[in-house]
Length: 182
Image 1 (cartoon, rainbow, N blue to C red):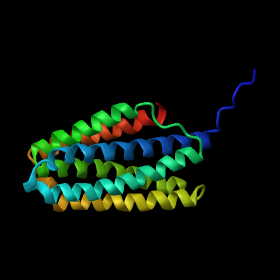
Image 2 (image 1 turned 135 degrees about the vertical axis):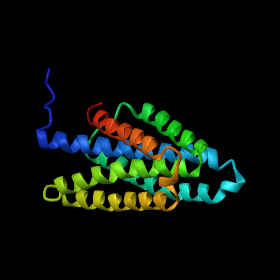
Image 3 (image 1 turned 45 degrees about the vertical axis):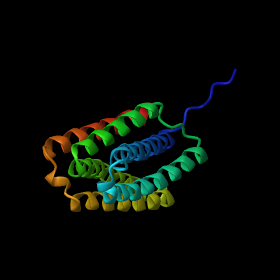
């Protein structure tokens, strides 16, 4: 009976990064779906629903890219995907029910954590994986665009913004740590 070899630390680190990034994009799509589940039903919120659909489409593109990277590099996705789906959808729906500014506060908080996370990865990958670093860098720019859109849409004026934003950021950082290993 052969014992499968464990990947080296560098390969394991890359697998952990890809798993986390895939999980994050999966969660982001779920958040936007939750928000749109509320705003799509309200004709007077059609502009917001369209804006959320546009941002969700960007996240879906990122997710598709990470789906392919996981397959190409034989990295398993997080086992927590069902939880991310439910939690993301729930977070999206709850923040949308709180209003447009709260939905945008959610986007701004999530994107703030993710763009910093991607920035760290770009630096780490630059020499060893330049093509992947370029992809992550582009996705980071997309996330910054979403964050700026959310801020322009009044994220900072959401009721209890600091509390809401802080809680969401803690949740994102916790999800990153969990997705690395599980």
